[in-house]
Length: 483
Image (cartoon, rainbow, N blue to C red; front, side, top):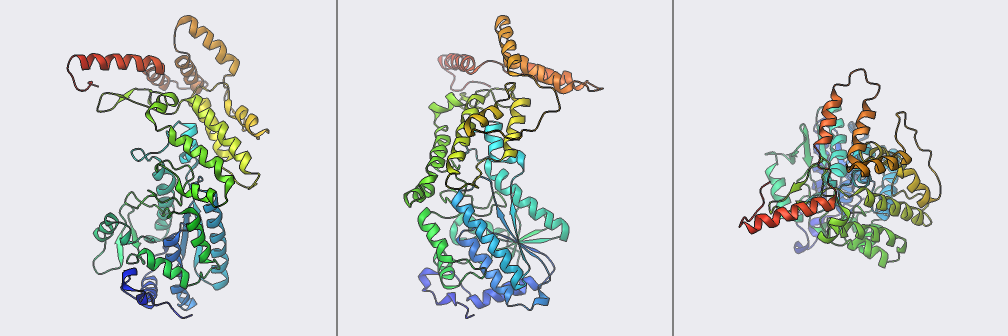
């Protein structure tokens, strides 16, 4: 095919210094220079699509006997991706794999997903992590960085070293440009990976600006059978950019770009999903409403209603101003979230029967956490599922003895009579249950002691006591409470 000469694009619209032929030659030379495998990050967006196309066309120009090392194309599936985006991504990956096999190219596609323990719903609904914010973005590392890095590490361990190919551009931000320059190896097109040993980074479109990216995609057809104008339509309908494959904390995260998780609350509004709904995807409305409900929990007035003051370590924490820092969502609110999420899943499956907002394995893990760590003796998850969905799952049976709803009610009445915390006694009983049958039970004393040292006041008692203490400190002329 005739190769597009990007240097012919008007200078004001392109930052590319080399024409496309030279860039393809650079890719071929680097690929053939050693035995290090390549891992390409592919998000389905414009930049990563451009990178994969460039690598694809460049390697297509090599003789087949020189294609001796593998090229892994990896995509990060956070399990909470916007459904329309994941649909596009899955179709692209499928076509890539078939095209690579038919063309005799060394590409293989792989999806990387978070471990069950790190999944969004296990942490939010299971453990009560609050909706992510700019100051507490707990999701990025668990959902994006760790899965991608674990894959890269596995390839590096197998081959010794690995080259990671990313669709990042210096024009994206001054910070990105500075980081890329800082880690560049003198005399090489490669940079050292900021966190992974024995890993190197190649950024073939670093000199492109956004106009050069779109010019390339619209003038050079997809080699695996995609129609790049569909990508243009997807961007137009979403009115947004893309979330890149995140492999370290310096990689630009989603920010205001909204090709990413439908539950993202780091941004104030999900303009992407709003635009999709305005463009005819009405079935996404329940997802947007649920996302907005999560975002609303960041409001100070709502926080105190849906989050408990005691943190997961059993202690109460304070900010620099001496005020209480809220902890995880209350179990009651998490039950509300799970009920609503399951109802939404049932509703949207009318449009897309295969759509899974929360998996059965996640439900099982949430159930385990609630039963063993949250004193949910009522075993709420199966009941919530049955009521919300109208059917039952084949729930895994517990091999260890667990208490029941009736026993929790009996315990509550006894604790009320003795004026002690029901949750504290329930947790002490759970510790005893966990150690039952063990030949050596010495560790039980340490765990019982830790339970007794937790703050067992309820939210109202904590709030009242700390507000009174704060008022006393202020009346004595102190600016901050001592912790």
